[in-house]
Length: 159
Image 1 (cartoon, one colour):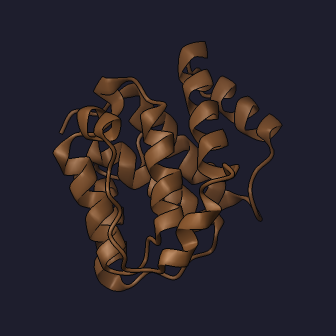
Image 2 (cartoon, rainbow, N blue to C red):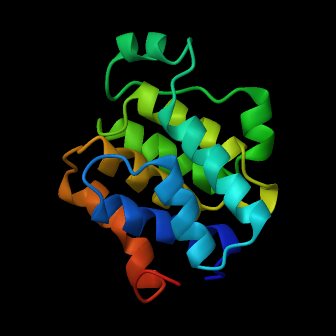
């Protein structure tokens, strides 16, 4: 598998979220990424993704009423931008009942902030892990294995 620059950045962020009690501050995120030598455009992209991943839009809350296990329909823009494999992963996570529609919405919107070449299954898995880790979500074994498989595929967290 090809490791993209944003995969490395999201790996750093996932590690930071694991090491923090609660959501790390914007300053600690920026400091960590700068210390690791991330490029300014990578830092900007990561911050935009995190902002989208954690700060609600007015219409996102309405999707909760649909309940876990409901199917999310991707609009034409998302269908054109998100690869089939990424939409398939989000559909799988939604069908298992562990990524409700609001969680799917946050992850989808964060992915839409990435350059097209960075919208990969691995990056979708990392953003989902960051979102769920921050929310202290319990994952069933199949979902946990699906998401954490990226670390096995890449030989651990990449730096």
